[in-house]
Figure 1 (tube, rainbow, N blue to C red):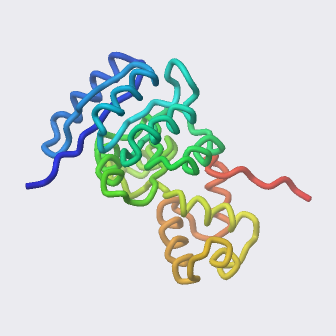
Figure 2: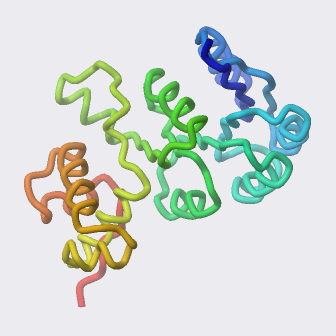
Length: 218
């Protein structure tokens, strides 16, 4: 029998939080063990419940999201935190990734994407970053199956940034502590996800989607 994934939802929008909890409770392997409208009460519940996954809105009353995240990790170290937001500030996303989040989802993500992210978070998989432009591109391409594999991972974002700074595959491998073969695998995945046909096209698409900040001309 599959183990249940316990989830705590922290979001100050009562209607959205309630709807999200209803969606999650319909899944046979997910159970909502608590919900909160602010960071303080969410942290208190996490300390008592030790959920597998916390879904945390970026903009909640009280302390800033980074402080809330760090306090959550302090009271329940094994809990994986999945951030949801209507914003896609890549600077904030990188800061949260460095603080140990399991993923960052734009609120435009489909139900299937959210469920996949929760299951990936519980399995301690690679950090997933999913922003709104990916949903728009799938709709334009006529791909409406809600497949979650269009999301770039944190590692793939690191590769894109280094390609944008004109680093070779070998230089990227050395910088990230991985093999050149792994760099090539990441690039193939990124090309497919962005619909890019060259390294320059990949960088241009990533820049247009605000996944990376372009370097100023010298």
